[in-house]
Image (cartoon, rainbow, N blue to C red):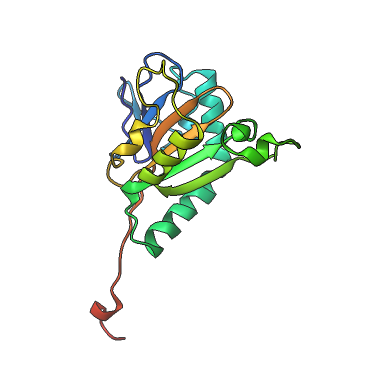
Length: 187
């Protein structure tokens, strides 16, 4: 596994090169071989990593199409409920993979052009995936096992599913600040 530290960085740990996993690192700046990355800390810069498979790049680009909306929803969910950021999980489903999870999509008709996004508590998403798309008996491990433990601090777990595979990553550097109006000074 090779780490690339960054505020919203990722580190690849997919030795088989199949589905893939990227983990969030929450440190200062992104550097490569001792030099600073001029792209900054962005998913776009990470997509240029030579160690990624084309499938991983395709799934990360799919996530990129909903990234802003997902960030907004995570912020809204965690500020309007008791859900901790580290317990939040997101499933991004490509239009072509929608039929794997939803009967209505398998019934026919054209695939909607955009990705589907499911957001909620990681344990509930784990149960949903096991019910809708159970691991095969030949699977060497539970592909959704990452959902059983909280994400690293300030990150959310993201699963990106397309017709070929699943990519799991920890995303972001979310900071939730709770303000108690009762403790605020009067103006």
